[in-house]
Length: 270
Ligand code: NAI
Image (cartoon, rainbow, N blue to C red):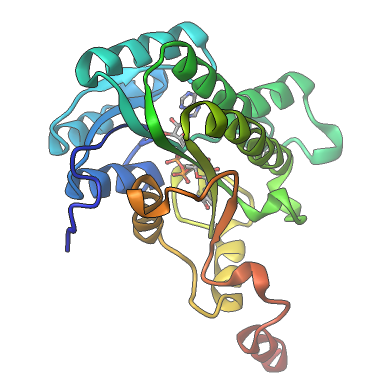
């Protein structure tokens, strides 16, 4: 059911790759709730083609932009300005670790790859905020959401250098959130999401086990990409005007559980 929560609002969604992407679900939901959106992804993702289907569905277009490239981001923000004037929300749903892709263990990282992980998965948020500020594309009270994972706070052994990227992402959220709050009344938050079956998620070794374990630990079960889209839409809406610089767990309660009955029962069965 749609409530018109984002009626009259305009925004940019980064990171919809295919139908399983969290950003894909957020785009659909934001559109359903009355927003006008602009989609963007890296040139390589554009070539895969499926994001164009999403653009048709949401009655919009896709602008190719590598989120680590300032010129690409400037072109994107200028396109948003000419289309919308100013925007009210942005979703950062971007993550990639070349070290994880190439199975480099955490104590033997390739440092060029490490820089890429941090640049793509965290510093890109800083760059996108910086360019948005310089191009004056953000409306007063705009809301920015970036997706994080609890490995920023605790060790998840297979999450490798992505854990460092998420810790940096959450720190940028606070540091930039303070400044944009003062200057524009804008909000920035991270949503720390349950394991979710997407291209990025499934790239983590042992993902299926992490997914099942989290599901059994969480009293509400894992939050799906659709659930996450609902939460993001609420954060873009006027109902969360005073929420900023937070890392908000959207994980079915996982982050507050030490051990659950379901996990204990698994051990008894063994
Ligand atoms: P996904 O693979 O569908 O999305 C990742 C996106 O990042 C892709 O669209 C990809 O094209 C984009 N990207 C990569 N390099 C880029 C660049 N240089 N410039 C612009 N875009 C680039 O996977 P998912 O899971 O939807 O990931 C979205 C976010 O959610 C990521 O930040 C991820 O770390 C986070 N997250 C995912 C969880 C999961 O279990 N899937 C759990 C918690 C957080």
